[in-house]
Amino acid sequence: MRNYCTFSIEPRPSEKVYVGSSAGIDARYLLRAVRILNFILRFGLSFLFCALWISGVQATPTEVTNVRIGVHGEKTRIVLDTNEKFSYRVFLLSNPYRVVIDLPKISWRAPFQRLKKPRGAIANYRFGLFRPGNSRVVVDVTGPVKVVRHAFLAGRGKNPSRFFLDLKPVDAETFEQFKNDVIAQNWNIGKTPDSIPRVVSKARDRKDDRKIIMIDPGHGGVDPGAIGPRGTFEKRVTLRVAKSVKHALEASGRYIVRLTRDRDVYLPLRDRFRKAESVGAELFISLHADTIKNRRIRGASVYTLSEKASDSEAEALALKENRSDVIAGVDLTKQSDTVASVLIDLRQRHTMDQSAHFARFMVDNLAKDIRLLRNTHRFAGFAVLKSPDVPSVLVELGYLSNRDDEKMLRTKVFRKRVSKAILRAVDKYFARLKRISKS
Image (cartoon, rainbow, N blue to C red; front, top):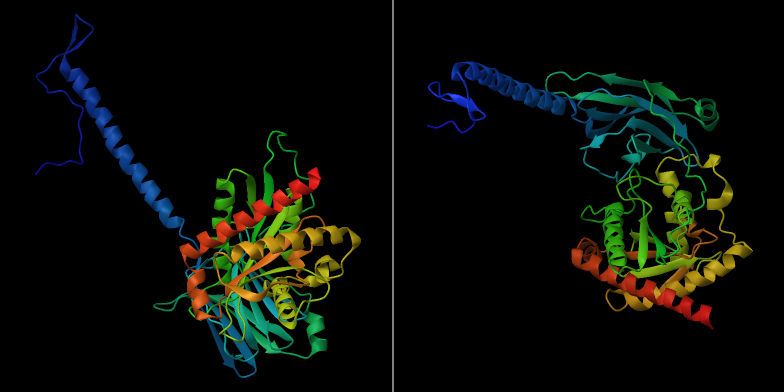
């Protein structure tokens, strides 16, 4: 059998090798040099492949393979099964009561399951990427608690390595005593700014008259958003649709499109509209796909900002969406009232009018391709639409609580239809502005 994995550049021993036209050299001397070269090549390549293989093994990411909750008397334990030890930081938050576990970037292999009812002191939990290099577990608790024990146990036999945290209910007064305590074990993840700074967009080439559009895929990372009956995550639906819309707008050659996030990472509400402001965006489109108690309701809708909600459903939706920072374990006491307040200043009045015009174009064009709710254009105090300078709309693509909508939202056909409709709406919006500027 031929060995196709070996190679040789050796001349046959009987051959003489000639350099130039007249100088002959005994092939034995050249043969010896060639053999040395072959040795270096073969063993050098073997060493290189081994080194690459070893580095690949060492680069195996830290994984969390399961999350378990157990109740032991008055204590409630949450356990993270993992393949190796990691650093961590734990702190408490109030209003509402939460326990936050910060970790390095983790590969989450654990199945995600929302609790149907509380287990001991734990009402629910969620996990995901909080910011680059920093994963987070947020534990909703039924009331004030304190951490009574935390440890990392090495794996034995079939039992994996695991980190655990024991929680014990306390009264509100006791909680206040422990609230500012931070438990840290080898924690060295550098602190990043709470939000992106306000910056002025760099001037573009004057010849480039393309409009800048900011697309905002709702939720992300540790904030999954709504979850459908089949396990469809809102954060994944919105990101896929956002990328499709970006492609459609850019393919027209008329727009520069930016995404507030292009991967599964959490982003604070105020950073979303500030990103739009920082790049000089002329439109902001936030994409969502909610759930509702009545599972028969389906269809898309478009929302704009208002001090007073158009109806009780719109008000409830705004309150729900505005809790995104709470879901992600953010301490809202350190934030200004910019996001929390829904009061409208005079500077926003013009922006709100432009948002309403764009919303009408959105409704008209979405209606040509997808199913809509009745009274499609609604309004409420959505924090993500608070930019005073950038016309903004929030598009609810459908309801994940409805099985038909959930199935539709996962399809490429739906993403293409929505993308084409949004492109037409954006075109008509800027065409209107152009007509007004000439009049």
